[in-house]
Every structure is written in C-alpha cells, then in structure tokens.
Image 1 (spheres, helix red, strand yellow):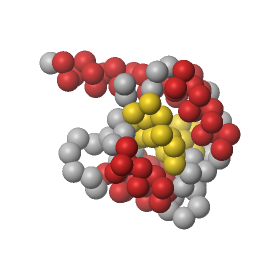
Image 2: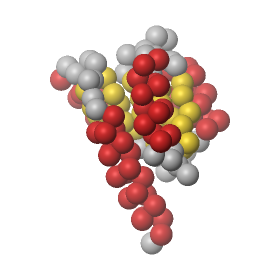
Image 3: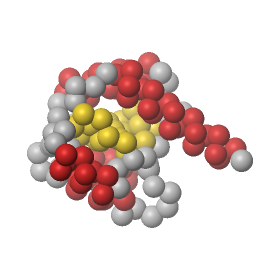
Length: 127
C-alpha cells in the first residue's frame, strides 16, 4: 500500500484529500504546516507528497527544498496552491516540483494524478 503525505494548513482540504485517498486504498498521513511536513517526510517515508504552498512558518517551497535535499530516489511532489500567479508556478517548476495544480481543484484530478504516478512507479520497479 502506497504512503501519501498530505500537507495543508486548511483542515477542509486535508480532510477531503485524506478521505478520497483512503477510500482508494492509500495509507495517508497529514501535516498541518511546513515544519510538521519535514518531520513527517523523515518518519513516514512517503511514496508521494501533496503539498500546499502558502502555510504558516515554513512554506511549501521550504518543504520542497528539504524533500529534494534527501538522498535516494526523489519522492514525487504535487503542489496545490491558491497562489496561481506565473511567478509561483515558475518557481515551483524551477525548485523541482513534479506536478502543480491551482486551487480550486477536484478530488478526482488529484486522485487520477496520484494513481497514474504510482502505477508507473510500480511498473518500473517490476522491470
């Protein structure tokens, strides 16, 4: 069972994503801010991270930098953000994000993306 880390300071978004992902069989952990996310990445060792950009304390870019600094295979990261300005988008790609969705988003769009990425990882590991 794949482990997903959901990082968002909005309890409604955390709950929505957790419910949808758990119903699809994923093991979901949550973090409410950037510092908790960095700790969770170490303790949970997620297969996929869904990451908000604007959070109190350490923002999503700081969390992404911490994730990208880890040794080993990079963990796929999807950034979700209400800050859909071109500068934010460009910075996300430059900093190494794998996927980017602007809020509002549909739960189905997130689920389809996660399933697609993780199923490709499984197929690649079978080779």
